[in-house]
Length: 235
Image 1 (cartoon, helix red, strand yellow):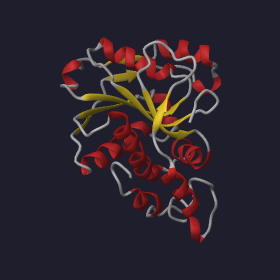
Image 2 (cartoon, helix red, strand yellow):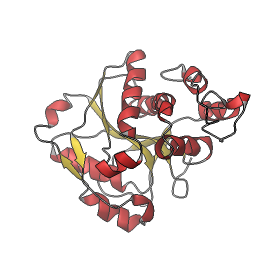
Image 3 (cartoon, rainbow, N blue to C red):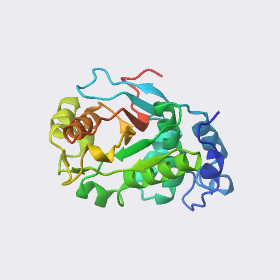
Image 4 (spheres, rainbow, N blue to C red):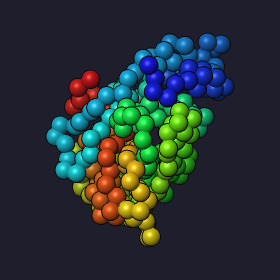
């Protein structure tokens, strides 16, 4: 049973003219964000713990909705790379499911989305993780959770990770984030701190975020992502 519920409406009531976000088919059966087949495939995914091999130092426990494949991969690409902002609602609802699974019984949580660089935000039609975090928080609050979001970090310019190998990702991530002035451990206030990202690959980015947060006095308890690359994961 879903922890926060009501996903079918999010996955099918979204009116988009570009065809199904999960398979790109157009036509009457796929004019509402996701066609029934892709909506069913996303509904069938269940969050699970994931871990890259090898895992970088400082990486917190990670949970993902599913592998970076199929309708989930296509939906993330449509949202991030093709400007389909309306997918933030259903994807944020799915991310809320991951948070609920990662944290366990409902408790006060602080959601910390991984910040984008200014260049990445421009190329991806805005702060895509910030939007996902807002929708995830709204869904969790609707289910009775005490949720806050925080942006204690800023991202420094760095190479696009798509073109880097694992060593290059680790090197780029090591100095990729800085704390914002005046932000610190008081933001957590005894809450479970959940770092949010869209895709887990090597874990270098999440480890760097966790390390920087600890330097601010914020201890991340877990990371929640929508998808994890498959070649180094077990499902």
